Length: 131
Image (cartoon, rainbow, N blue to C red; front, side, top):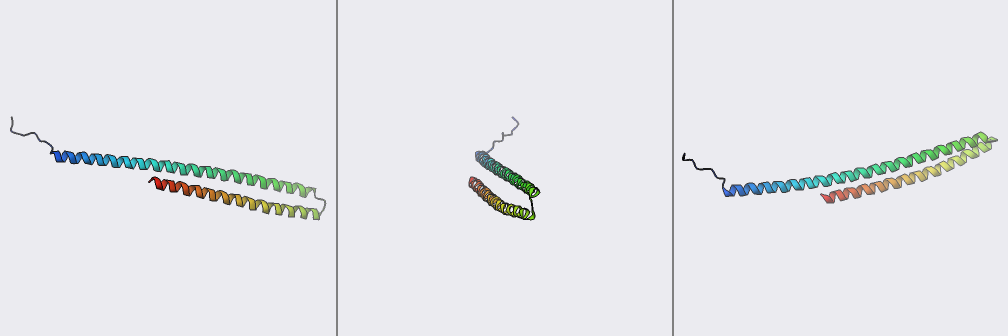
């Protein structure tokens, strides 16, 4: 023997190291779980936003199509008008119809925006609860 004693790690130090590793593992697992919930929440929010934008785009296209069709109808009526009184009557009817259509369109857009805001708030509230 060379007179050297084998070095042993004290039991207290091993226990401390073991507890530290366990605590680090639990903290990491908690972090990963929270990160996964955040990703799921963000994905849900992004999907909700995508659906809302798609709905608004479809509505906008529909409004544009209807407004252009009304303008062509007016042009057709104006071309076929027999006198100035008929022209003025067609223009007056067109303006009244377009104002009514615009009001309805704005009402629909407002309702869609409110619905989207409500869904976004609900998604955010769920995400906050998950944390």
